[in-house]
Image 1: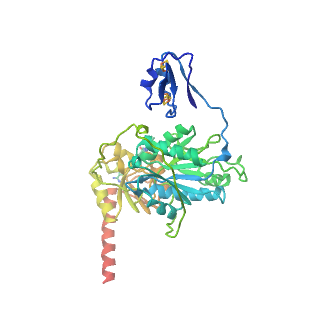
Image 2 (image 1 turned 90 degrees about the vertical axis):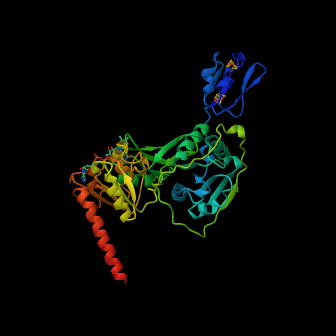
Image 3 (image 1 turned 135 degrees about the horizontal axis):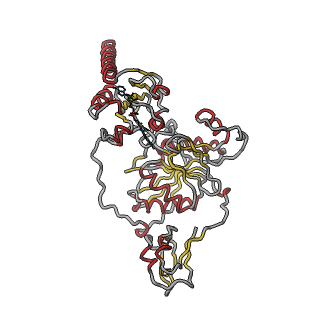
Length: 426
Ligand code: FAD
Ligand code: SF4
Ligand code: SF4
């Protein structure tokens, strides 16, 4: 895509300059000229009263073979790698080995003074780290990070780029995709390259008819699966004509590899070019939210409450339960919508995806959107007074009963078990 000024129509009125958010238009005498800062956003087209600006679609066929290797945006905050980056390095490692023996998984680290994170990236599966450092990248800005990542992708041409679907990833990935004129699939729950792996997954997890697919097909294009239509079906999306293929994946969906402290890799220091004028926002102050941090993604045990609690006070019992079993409080969306608990506790399709060792679902019916966020937990224990509640279809252990009677009994049994254990240690 390119933006073009039709010289014979331009009257030099400069309206387009005012409309352009990127300072991407200069005047050459009385004719507007588009410079290299243009992002093809199109704002100037409607601003021109003389229809002197047009967008042209580049019909060039992309040479797919020029693109190689998998990149993972290794998101860091304040010099610490985010958990989702570790998970995606593991997933990238798996995919790279399925594509070919010489396909590498590469971490992309963006920030300032963050080279110490390269080792951690190798330990979680990266073969190579691209380091994009600059003082102007100290804190995340959409403009700054987009600019340097787009430049790096244009230079090194990765075949696949994966981002965590964090607040930052969700902001960054669509910008990068738009600048590169490529596709992006958001919130993927499954990534595959081999047709055979994809068929295997569909046969186990969906009702999709895979009989027309050839398991011997060598196609290694990325098959990006995500819930669609409110989670009622799974859509698999491909990006056959442009590169890189790009996806976001929520924290907690993919498994990280076991850390290998001996792992090493190659470090590529990218020559970053970012000017103040590339960044339209200015960070004046960073205010950290004072509320209690809920780390659902890292939790080993989650005790979640649903509408069956009947009132917000019900979460006092859930909190007591969670404290007892050393767990974290989760919630269904119904309680969040009712204002009983903060959204940061919500588990499910529009909340957090979790994979704890034990998930207690208390007074939760088991709507498909809730299951989408917790059904890969190792052990699911459901407490519900309705024996036909759908949650029981995914539960490993089901307790039919009133949660206000059942949970205090579990707490009591836990206390008894602890007392017995302590006595046995004396
Ligand atoms: P209910 O469905 O009302 O279930 C309450 C359950 O409690 C019932 O099964 C009842 O039998 C039981 N119960 C009642 N009293 C007791 C008691 N005393 N003891 C034991 N059991 C009792 N939901 C999510 O959770 N997460 C999401 O991310 C999410 N995203 C969504 C996205 C979209 C686009 C849409 C359309 C919906 C989404 N939802 C999500 C909402 C979802 O469809 C359900 O409405 C919601 O999960 C229901 O919450 P619940 O199970 O707590 O409530
Ligand atoms: Fe030329 Fe249109 Fe820009 Fe005016 S708004 S300077 S006519 S391109
Ligand atoms: Fe500026 Fe957007 Fe027009 Fe490019 S398309 S010149 S960035 S307004």
